[in-house]
Length: 243
Image (cartoon, rainbow, N blue to C red; front, side, top):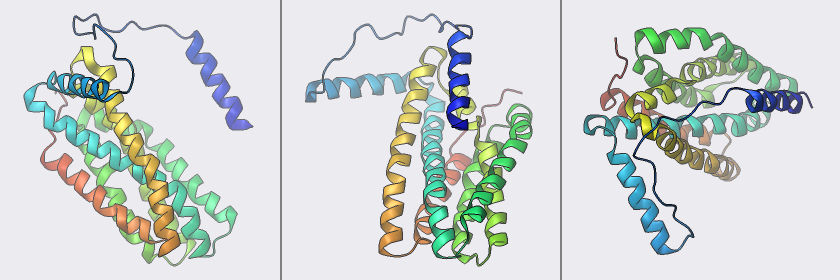
């Protein structure tokens, strides 16, 4: 009920807030594609490829790295939300109150990190936020199956909250730096759509692995994805902060 009330207030604030016009551009789509026939799907794919090619050539691989990092980050969050209570309850025998406290610890750390994360993104560098926020959860996922107590798990969840605090806004900000102004909304939507598809299947995969093998296995399976995403961001992605 409290969450519903807060959501209602947010809707009202958004509805009565100021309207910001999108940048004027001659690159707007001239016609819409209707239906989901093979021809329509090919037309959508061609339009998506054309939209991607509007990114400056030297920044295209950075955009792809950001898409992969967002996919890994969203999947990681869904695995934590869906599999952590299962692991904590069945493997460590933690009570519901203790499981709730783990998420409270994470939420507090995320809140505390809001201002430092903004400073890092604006003053130090985008990659100083995006790379650690993608790589640190990989270490957390590798160590979670080794925990044997509430306090050990709490330390790891605090580290995961630290990473989530760094990731808030950093991937979106980096994408704004990379994509052209007239295509920001569409290319951001593509990035988030791919990420949401990944996060949508993450609980299903995690649930199958937990049921067939162990609640600890989903964390070990998703750790390599985070390692690959962080490595690609570090080695392929360009620093886009204009000093």
